[in-house]
Amino acid sequence: MSAHTSFQIGGPADAWVRIQDVDELAELVFLCNESKTPYLVVGGGNNLLVRDGGIEGLVLHLEGSLFGGMERVPEGLRLGAGVRLERLVGECMRMGWTGLEFLVAIPGTVGGAVRMNAGTRDISVSERVLEVTVLDPNGAVRVLKRDAIPFGYRRSGLEDAVVLEAVFSAAASSPASVRAAVIGYWEKKHRTQDLVTPSAGSIFKNGPGGLVPSARLIEQSGLKGLAIGQARVSPIHANFIVNEGGARAQDVEELIAAIRDKVRRDHDVELELEVMVVGRFAA
Image (tube, helix red, strand yellow):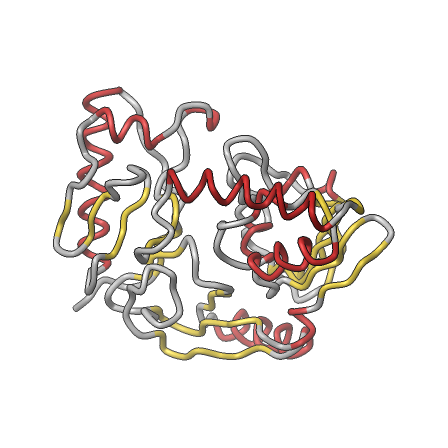
């Protein structure tokens, strides 16, 4: 799985399955549930730490053309779950669609962004979602309006479903103004985040209610630059753990535990993981 995650970390999956359409996905999900075979849907492999022993069962990757569609609709944009956010932002700049500029430099796909309610400190995907089409655990395709989705801070309540597509609100504007807004977001992120070294983005959710930046707490605890093996707390952004080359998931989990312990002792705050940790420990 190191080849399929932005962390570039992770042992082998039992099987990697490329899904081309909804019927194929529904059939596999049904068979997995019937046989009690574990499965995990992976998009861009961001916000994901796979343990060194790999993943039991099937890893399902949505990559058919149906999952990569992008269509202008009266309300905004209809987007397949497999659409990369960088492609979406690029298309918005080219066509002059405004409202989604904040997604620049957020890695991953539309499906993952909806599922984890991705965003910045100031705005999240939930503020742009109009409806989401999902495959529910029973294998039924359902269209959920925004008000029926229990979005919260870095969560959607869709953890048991598979996001197939979403409609985002986006207004017409000029390509030049959209490009200028995207550049503004990009320059800020480039100054404050490590966008080069392999990572899974933010490791922890922000403090209570998302109001206290975890990066600030970690930095105040003197943990910037702390390393275990080849995993290091980023010197640029303290809420990033970066893989400096050959880091193991065990290194990252030990570093996570050390950060949590120090922040708990220094600030009486229990940091909650934002990154998803999956898989088996190495034998």
